[in-house]
Image 1 (cartoon, rainbow, N blue to C red):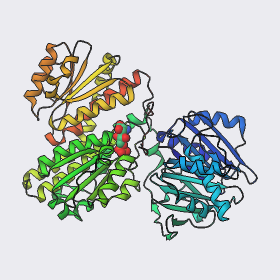
Image 2 (image 1 turned 180 degrees about the vertical axis):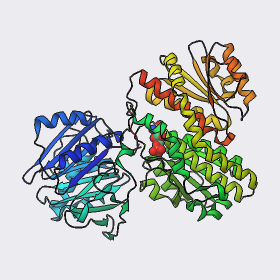
Image 3 (image 1 turned 90 degrees about the vertical axis):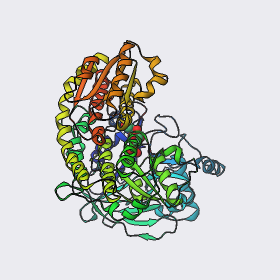
Image 4 (image 1 turned 45 degrees about the vertical axis):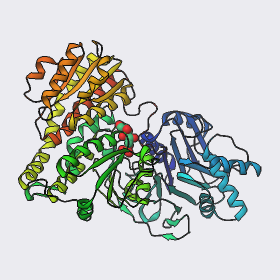
Length: 617
Ligand code: AGP
C-alpha cells in the first residue's frame, strides 16, 4: 500500500529518490519522507501530505547531499497520517533507520516487550516498533545489521517490504520482503543499486532487476553482488536477474491530462500486447504455456473458482459467463476477502484462477495461499511481472497491459477479459464444445477487437457532452444483462471511485425488484442494450424506466433504431460476438466516469481514500 525507494552508489541520491517517490505515489500518498546519508550524518525529512509537500519541507530543513538514501510515500495502516507517523523511522539510538511497506500484525506485543526493556516511541506506527526490535536484537546478539534484521523478522507476523540502514556501517543497505513487493535495480558492475516497490523509479538507470521472493533478506553493498538469504533458515538464495521491458515513456503520462485517460486510450495496444504470441488466428491456434502445460488439469477440472477484488472481480464475473457458455465448465466467482475466511470446500479437482492487476492485493494473495494449502491448482492472471500473486501461483498468464498508474482500473479490466476469453476458447475447443469453425470465427473476431476499440474511442466528445449534462446528479443506476451485467457493475464502480457520486450496477431485469423505486426525473440510468443478449428484454426495461421519467443513457449496437426512439442519449458500439461485447461496452462507461470526475475537479488518478494496490486487509 505504500511506495518505497532507495539508492546506494556513486550518484547524488536525492534526485533519484524524490523522482522515484513521485512515480510511486499511486501506491499511497497521505504522507512522505526521505533519509540521506552524506558520509557523516543521516538527514531525515518527512511530512504529512504528498511528495510535493516533502520537497518544500526539505528545502527548509536538510541539505540534499549524500550518495545513500531512501524514501517512502505512505498509505496509512497504523497511526493517522501526520508528520511523526510518516516514514522513515529512527531507532531509539538513531543509529538505525527504516522505511516499510506492509503491516506488522503482532507489533503490539513486541512494543510492550520493548517498552519493558526501556524503549520509548515517538509514533503510533508498527514500523517504529520493528526498527527498535532490530536494534534490540543487534545489541543482544552483537550481530551485524543483516543478521539482526533476519532474526527480528523471524519474530514478526505480518507483511513487509523494508529498507534498513545502520549509520555505524554505512556502506550497505539491508532489504527484506514478505507480502509486499521489492525490486532491486542492479547498476553496471554493481557500482550502484536501486530499491523500489516497482521498477518505475529506476528504469532509466538500469533494466536489470531482482525481485525478492517472500521471506528473503538481502544485504546490498556497493561493488559487491546482492547477497540474498532465506529469513527462516539462512540458506543462500541464487536470485534471478530479470531483464525488464518497462521504459520510461510507458510511465509518464504521454501527453494526456491524466494517467487514467492515457490508459483508456492504451487499450487497443494493451489488448494486442496481451494476445500477441498467443492468438494465432491464421493458424487457428491459441498458444498459452500456462494452460498448455496443464491442459489435462483444466479439462478434468470439476470447477473453476475465480478469486479477485474490485474491478478484477468484475472481470471474473465476465469470465464466469465465458467459461460456462464456451467451455461448459462450472464457475464460481469469489471476493478474495470473503473466500479467505470462509473455510471453503476445495479439492484437487478444482482450479482456482486469481485475477489481480497489481499482483499484490492482500485479500487475493491470501485466498491464493489458502487455496494452494487446500490442494487446488492455482492459475494467476496478473499484470505485474514478478508480483507476489504471480509468484505464488502454480501457473499463469500475464496481461501485458503495461503499468497501470491511474488508481481506477481500465486497461487491466479489458486485458484480463482478453486473457480469460482466450482460455475459455482454448478449453471450449479442447472439450469439444466448440466446433472448429465457431472457434476460428471467435479467433478472427478477437483479432478485430483492438481496431473496434480504437474506432469506438471516437465517441469521446459525445460522452463528454453527456457527462456535462449529468455531472451534478447525486445517484446513477447502471443496468446490463448476461455478459454485460458485470460491465454494469464495473461502470458503477468507475463512477463511484473517481467522481464520488453514488452509483449502483444491477442486472437489468432485477430493477423491478426494488431499484425501480429510485427512478425519477433526477436519476440518470446507464443501460447496456446491445443487439445480442436478451435485447428485447432490455428494451422493455428501458420502457419501464421511461415511464418513470428516468434519464436514459443507452449503450447500443451500431445501427440500432429502436432504442434511439426511447432513450435520451445513445452511444453506439461496433458489432461483435456477444461474448466479446464487454471489451467494447466498458469503454463508454470508462469515459463517462472520467469526464464527470474531471468536470467535478476530482483527483482522477489518485482519488481520495484509495490506493492503487491494496496490500493490507
Ligand atoms: C478498480 O478501479 C480499483 N482500483 C480496485 O477495485 C481494484 O480493482 C482492486 O483493488 C483490485 O486490485 P488488483 O486488480 O490489483 O488486485
